[in-house]
Length: 343
Image (cartoon, one colour):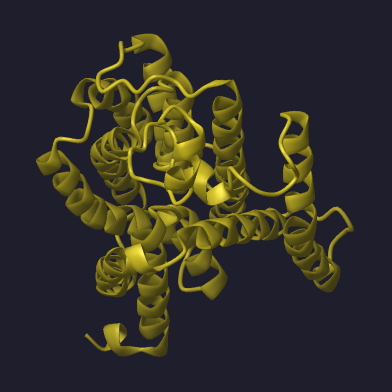
């Protein structure tokens, strides 16, 4: 019991609460934020952190999936094909990594390397989603399809890739699979997209959690504070979401994921400047963050110009985030109507 009342436990509760609020606000960042946060806090071995994070995620994702299932938003046939690919690979993934080495130190480095790459991958999917939506706006949005024709083989492969990634790193159950669904089923409405992803994520995360528990065991002193912090954080974030500008938070998450990914690559033993240059590596991580804040908007503006749009302006990033098939009224919709089809 005393282990649950230490400063370390309180820091885990605080990290879980903060990440839970962000997840509740934006639907982004579960494992992608929680896992690196706990690694940088130094609260345990990376394998234990991944296991605890997956187990906690299975708790709060189940609630979200049940909510969407009651509202009838998920496409259950699509979710079934994803689950058929993701669940076995989520179970196998941890065994594949564990079989690479018997050395705990090497396992630690391998996991940090995998998580670092997964974070960079997850960050890139956000930019890719915006770009896909931008192209769709310029070419004409796809006709919304409540029940699109299922493409079994590509969907199965997406599930397998997502399952492998989640089983090893706990990152990607939302971001990577979401962008793949967006590309495979462009007419799927936003609410169907999120609902389907949440439903398939529950057995995926459970499978990954069980495999990691069987291999590494479960650190209750890590899991309990994590659940205590993350569950109320998620509830609070969900309640205040309508009153918070989520678009800015999402962009902030992408910057944090990129910086965390680079930092974990350094922690995994990738030292481009040689050993013992911790200060220089920290400067590089900070430089990556500054570069994203300054250069990414410029690159985004240039992409917009290539599609015949001004560098800045409508459609804004916040508007693009709501596509595809999101029927909620956007702020500019009323102003644009008089000059369009309506007399």
